[in-house]
Image 1 (cartoon, helix red, strand yellow):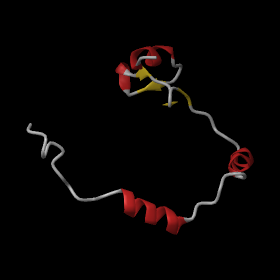
Image 2: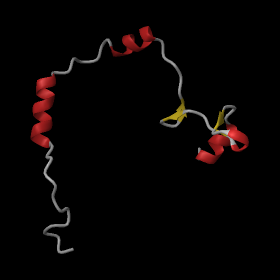
Image 3: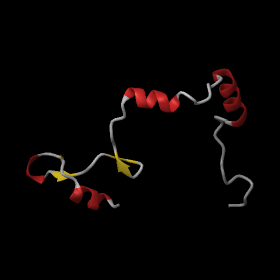
Image 4: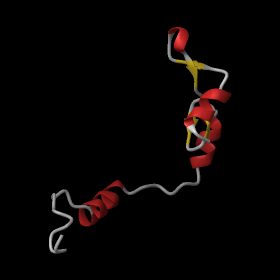
Amino acid sequence: MSQLAARSESPEPCGGGERAYRSPAVLKGGPRRAVPKDELLAAFATAPILDVAELRADLETFLNDDLRDPYEGTGL
């Protein structure tokens, strides 16, 4: 759905004054909705526990903060 179409179909005004337009709150293509806390906790209850130290070590190993020229050595 285009942004213009979303504005046209929403019942909520967005902006101010006489030129207010309508736009729904959209997250990943769908309208947002509140999720009850108990439902959210139940959804994550079976998720594996993250080992923060292991995650950090993996990130340090595979990610690099050094800036480089992406075209270096390509002849461009």
